[in-house]
Length: 245
Image 1 (tube, helix red, strand yellow):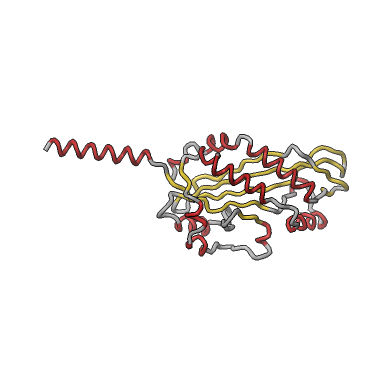
Image 2 (cartoon, helix red, strand yellow):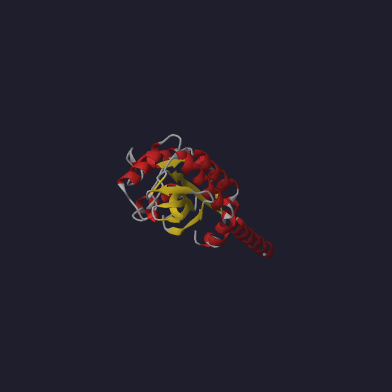
């Protein structure tokens, strides 16, 4: 009788130790770069500038793929080590039939889809204000395999530098947003981190020079600055996340 009680206590202890020792699992469900360079910080919005930004988006020489590849590699090989949970293998997510068949609400038109560069087989799924249907839908889709879903993206924006009047330098700001939702689609956290480029461009006559050979190095410079100590910043921000999943 005593032996049975001892065995029972040992089994309970082993179960609890195993449970507490296991990390929660999370599925990354978006990973993309926004090709539309934001310009609101410049305080201008002329038709000429809008056209230039759209032309840049569609220019094959404005190739953000290598930058997205670098960020993706750093995220999964380095930054993921700072996360208090494990990431499901990407192939289990993006190559699954249910992910491929998932139809986001507010799905993009063919024209709007040109704004975004998805990494690999990821699809664009809107997350944020009015994004509840998408957040709950994709979270429930992976509820049997993961304790939550993670949305990741990067975008770029012009910022004023130094100058007089309509002639001045400009810089680029790279920002990454990460948003985690539990298996019910409830937000656990959402934060953005950003850094400015060391490389600069110019604004002449009040309009920035928007050419791939000028803008792409600025985007790369900003992303390099952002990735500098991102692992430490991520660890600090989400240190208690596992308790909320």
